Each structure stands twice: as C-alpha cells, then as structure tokens.
Image 1 (cartoon, protein in one colour):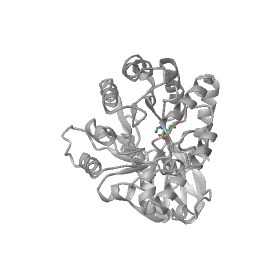
Image 2 (spheres, helix red, strand yellow):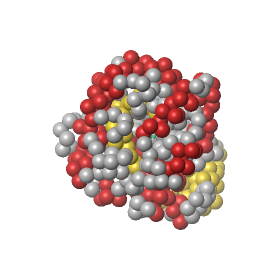
Image 3 (cartoon, protein in one colour):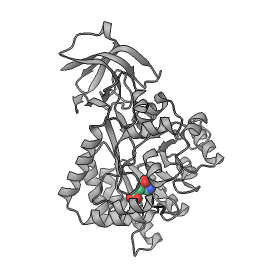
Image 4 (cartoon, protein in one colour):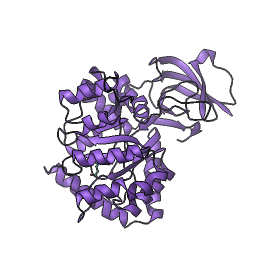
Length: 400
Ligand code: NIG
C-alpha cells in the first residue's frame, strides 16, 4: 500500500543537506518513505492525500520524558509559582503514588500520555523509570514503559528513597535492580545533582550500566554547576540533559566530544535542552544558542513529568526555543526532530534489518510525518500557543 502526500507548500526534511522543498510531495510505502521531490514529478500511488498548501515536517522525537507515574503535584507547582524553589525531594511524592497504583492503571495512564503526545505531532518517544525506586517497582515501570514507547531508560538513580542509606541504595541500583530491569531497557541514566546522586555515586551507576551493555545518558547541571556534563562526556553518554548551568569547560568538553578529542572511542554527547522544564522551575533557560555556536548538537525535549514539566507539547518547546533561546525556526525544529534522534542513536537506519532512521525525512527512513495547519514551520513561533497539528503519520500509519 502506498500513499502520496502532495501539494505540500513547505517540506522541511531535516535531512543531511538540511533541505527545505517548496511545492513538494512525499510517498509512503508501508512504514517507510519511498520517494520525496517536486509535486509535479511525483509518481502514482494507491492513495493520494492533498496537503492543501500546508507544511510537512518530521514527527517530533521526544528524547526525554518520565511518563510512568501516577498522581500529580499541583500543590508543589503552586508553591513554586509563589516563590519556592524546586528540589529533587518532590520525586518521593510521585514515587509513593506510583507504587500504590496497579499495573493496569499505570499502563493506562502511560498510554494516555503517549496518545496526547502523538496527537500533537510526536512520533518517536523515550521514557524513563525512576518513580519506582525499589527492585520490583523499577522492573514493573520498565516493563510497562516497554509496552508504551519506543525507547526505555533505566533511572533507578533518580532519588535515594526515604530511610535508605545512599551508598546502599547505589549498590542496589548497580546490582539487583539493574538485573531486574535489564530485559526491558536500552538506556541508563543518573540524576547527578545536589540532593540526588554525588559524582562518585553517579560514576558507579554509569560504570555498572555500561558494563551491562546499556547506552548512557545523564541528568546534569540542572540546578547548579556540577560534574554531570564532564561525567557524561567521560563515559561517552549519548546525551546530557538539562544543561542549565554550564562552565566554559563544560561547553568545550561537549564540543570536543564531537571532534574526537576525548580519546574514549565514543561518538559525541548531545546536549538536551528542556525549555518547558526551565520555565516551570524558574531556572535560566539552557544556553541552546551558545551550545550551537560552539558546535555542540542539541536536542529539544518535553521532559514530560508531574514535577518539573507537566506537558508533552514539543511545539511549546520549539516556540520557546525560537522566542526566548534565540534559535532559528529551522534550528529549533531540527533539535526537536533530528536532534532527538541523534540523542537516541536513531538518526541513521539500516534498511536491511529493518531498523529505520527517525527524525528526518529521507528515502528509507521511517515514515514519521507531521503536517501543520499552516503553510510553513515559521507559524510554530509566529502563532504561539495555537494547536497547529493537522495530521500525523507514525511509521507510515495515520495517527491523527
Ligand atoms: O528531569 N531532574 C530530575 N528528574 C525530573 C524531575 C522529576 C520530578 O521532580 O518528579 C526532571 O526534571
């Protein structure tokens, strides 16, 4: 079955050449893109969708979310808006609510959040554990996450649970908990921050998870300068997320990770900016402009979670990145699509074994497409707050 999308006013491919095609068309065959080019030259297909002069972009790749949770933290948010500052301790509130929720309800809640995200143009999602914080509840969160999203990250090292010694808990995270979650996860993460895990504890977690064959990511430099970025680069993590407080040495280390200066044999570390979280916690916005100018690839992600960023809207992140972080529309859309794919190691695919690239529109890539009810992507920033998603294809299937 093939579908021709034609009469596209602007096709923002985010491919390697950064091509933006006018009066374009795309052909979807099964779950993959089989052709792109000028509408006037498009081949015939089984089905035709007239875009009516709308813009088409890659579906958003949301590379940082925490969707496996129950309860909400409205009271904490209200206190924050009244001047309280964010602290990692709120994670314990969500952990309590999550532990008291059945598998059925936790799955239903997670799937509801995925549906909400897809209806706004997100076509590829990562999510994390981290509200279980004991062996059984972390394994359960990982198992449920694997049924709901594309990529699962183990975040047992999110907070030391009440009543536990930090060193003993780190042993658990590196030992029996890791063994229990391992079948369900591709990535591991650690919240390396004051009030969460120290540099030494983070180092132990990253080493154990790397030895277990997991790809790595780090929550770092969210609440103040710290060792998160340097650890991420040292361990060859795929991304370091938050990056609100960076020293020049941090920026240099991230840039160096892409120029082969680390000597650790890894590809570079993406800096993932989470602007919705920054606004909700009243932290300074991550320096996305400065990172790009220094040659560091960035991703934009929603960080959807009940504590610091209760939104799955990638469009909101893109709008903020343009209006407040001084990215161009093209840069912001790229960070929210190709950048997310880069942070998840899914930017290039392999037609042979069926693993397809996501986050950009090119022949052979997964057909993840986002049609806007607007003639260009500029409208995402020009008309802030307006729900512009008109249609979504996820792996070739119409999802909205
Ligand atoms: O990415 N920073 C750590 N984890 C989440 C917040 C978790 C929470 O407060 O519930 C984040 O912002």
